[in-house]
Length: 326
Figure (cartoon, rainbow, N blue to C red):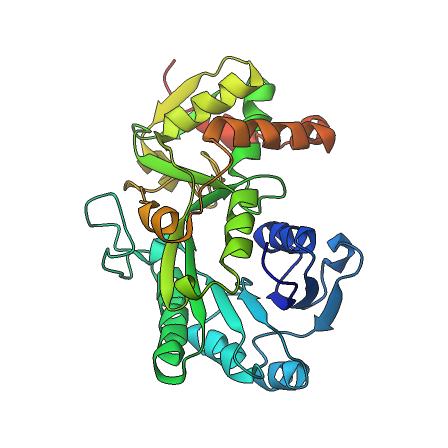
């Protein structure tokens, strides 16, 4: 366990950042969050709050100018530009360890898999990749020129309770109700998932470690699986059958506002596979959850929260199914 530290988490109330706050509290650290105050009822007792919109740079400077932190986690994405990341780094007093949650989508996904930290970055994913790359570069430049201790963390698809990308719960909803799962195309593109608690634990473990200063790390689970294989794993966890209905994605163009058909963000035409060799070899960090155990834990949460009883609108899927041959 690292020494007790005063820490700032930018965000703190959504999926990854809330899991991180809980992990840091377990380590005994003093936690302050900086956010716009929309979901602070989720915060555990004892967490301090700085109300601020990080994109208001003058307000951000004023909000943190008198505070001193040993470590800072930059997680919130609003969307957050490179200028926003730089503004936070420059507003901080002293030289705290700044850990930036980036994304595996900074890599050029037109290149062959798997993607390591040495894979060239690029704008394959548009503005999201552009903003994350700019944020990485702003921090790494401050590390080189000022010695600011920074660490870049690149997760991939993250699963677990409170997922803001409702990929797992999307399929829970359908398989539980005996609905077919619509698959655009062949469903054979490879995906890789990591559990939110493993990501939070990794972020906590990196804190204050000089080996991590100036470095970037992929952090995700060890397994890759096809799109349909992911759904089959979920069906196995639920102990239910699953029926796939493949369709030509061009059919979606018939609708003015097509709904989601295969998770919230699992439909894209490329593989997404990442190595974790660096974080394991340099920092000794490895996940606790397999894909199956992570899905089981999320399924238990889903039922505990009563989400298995919620109302789900399948109207769009029914319209699409009506166009498919039997």
